[in-house]
Length: 539
Image 1 (spheres, rainbow, N blue to C red):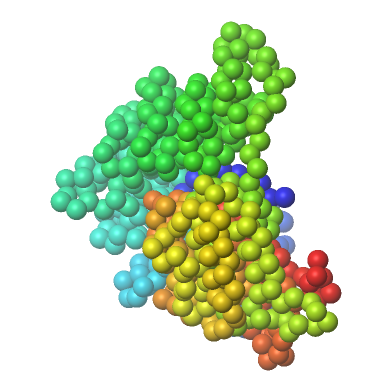
Image 2: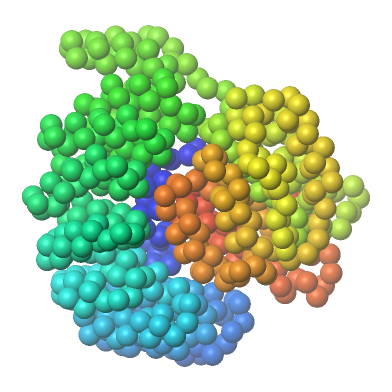
């Protein structure tokens, strides 16, 4: 069974997943090994560099990843060529990540010029990927150069990306310029909350004395979005009594997502002195906050007293007296929640979004075997029936357009409302049209202001909507979800094969699954990948 890891919430929203850069492995150092591997990779790349077949395109992406582990001037030259010339956007992004890892300042500057040129000429998303690409830069001169060249630029996206990279790199030279930029932005009549949020995160990661003081002060900022940034990074460098007091306030914040972010950060930092506040949050918070508190205390203490705040409180009291383990004989309370595919639904504010595009009718029914829509409908009905009446929920479907059951937002899962939702589903889950992934997710966020978790089921790559390119959707969705922090779990449902031969070449389960996995990882969730041939459809 899939178990949610609450710490993914911070990780996924702070920096994009490793799909583009690959595992965080150290570059190869043996020159002979580098020469041997490089020769093979460059020969293969030249053979397929102009081939736009999906299989060969995917192979070029992998070669670009591998080059990022081979520090050599020929690796850098080839990666720059990919960034500047390749027709595949993801190959270019992968090359940017690899250049960030092995490129010297000269190469980084050249990459930046290309990214800047495109960001000024059109709505290019390369600027959004620059910061994550440079977050693992090994050339120590990259950070100071970002401070001098990119942060002062008038390009907002490039500046945000640069600040994100500076925080990850913990560039000490950035601290003072960022503090000045923060002060300047705060004085504006309409300050940019995204910029201030990113500056506070970076200052918290850099962690010099003056920056720590600024971050501490922001823990009491009237704007909850800035308190959210502090909750993420305060414990990176501030673990004295002042820092703990600030975290205690954040754990009692009026805004649920600030409290939840604080408890996740406290768990990652293994801060047992904050257990009393976590226990209160377990007692009084919503279901997602209870889960975050539970995960944090289990990870920190090694104890497991379930979701029973009184048992945790007694254990903590005994531990302070030097009698650790006294509560171990008491069984901790367990929470019974609904299940959806492999997910335990640890939320009481949920939205289900179901793909009803034409491909959901695949495969044609054969000997009574269900098609994709049959499977999706069966699981959706099952989970709705199992929802607790205190849960707020809504359901939406999408093909070329989005259709929502309750257009005014989520409602309690009373028997009457569940009955109404099930009746609506009978007429709504009819396969037709293209796949508007971006519209489905953004309208889901906009139309349901109280939900904190989305379960998004789809079987294909986007084919219509404001944004169709997966890499564009990822960054636009990341931006839209920066402050909402809605966990997006995905179900990649690619059972069976297309009904008509001509459609086979347009469906690529690997590509679809990778995209669905990225949506989940970038938004704190998990992806369930369901791919079965005809004979397994009844299982």
